[in-house]
Length: 235
Image (tube, rainbow, N blue to C red; front, side, top):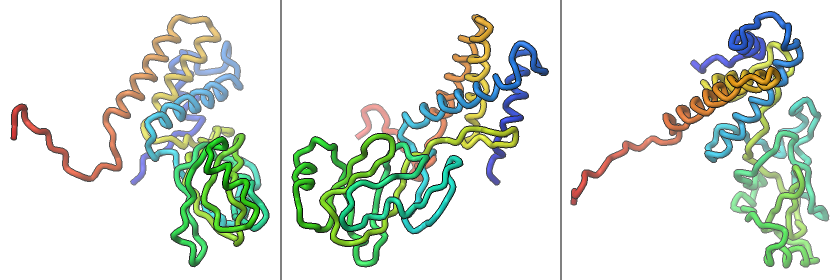
């Protein structure tokens, strides 16, 4: 059974307990939720630094119309079509992990990542005759550029690091690995104490850092092989 996710209401209660202010007074009703979302983003950035797969999602251009982060989005937006090089990625896109073709007969096709200034990508941009695309690059916040121009419609499966949604309502749940809610509570408490110019803010910051360190020091969820340690001077 999966660990229960914490709701914004539960996080608010925990943080107000840390602040010794259960009922809003110095910290207004709208204060704590914004601290929670800032702390959530802080934790998400720390999770991304380890390059694990905790925040990854997979979508295909065949998924159709979906709602992501409150925004309507058609996944056909990243289906490659002849005559077009630029495509809009999902609203929660942050970082590409993998891209593979889902079109029958083209399952072998892989697009290689390139920067806009690299010579082979620039050469592909100069190719005028449509052909099988070979490269992609990312532009701006969520634009996918595919080169050279494709001569066929291609559907893709994308795996990418996604934005962790804000907790916009009391019953919104924290979409982070368990038990990183503890780091969110600590960071949010520290942010709240900064409003009071309290020196205790640093202690809560340190508590959040300690939780992050303990989590990443105790988990390797993709490892299935038994680990062996070679003794000193062992042949």
